[in-house]
Length: 134
Image (cartoon, rainbow, N blue to C red; front, side):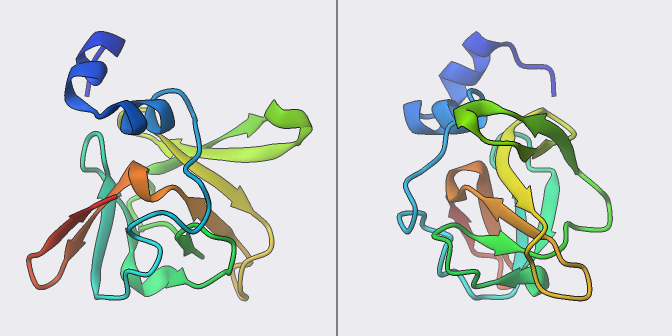
């Protein structure tokens, strides 16, 4: 998806733009998808690329939706993030470059990953055809 910043500003809310396009973060325990427990798929807010199946979601107690594995298509990519005086691994949508959150090596076994994702960065598409935007 080839949007420029002006087009993203037109299609996203101010908060969505701050998080998705400027690598911001929503406040912990405020995201609408944190407690979503229905069966379905989490897709990119900006381009609708499939990101995480609901079967890999778990309660990490960190305040953001957490997943132990991305969808098999591999639409999540990684880059080093040295902001805020920390060394972390940022995750972003491979298709459009939207910031999703970070991945940490403290998730459940056997994979051991915790994809910590902003609700604002995703839309939930329930198997029951309902849609919930972050």
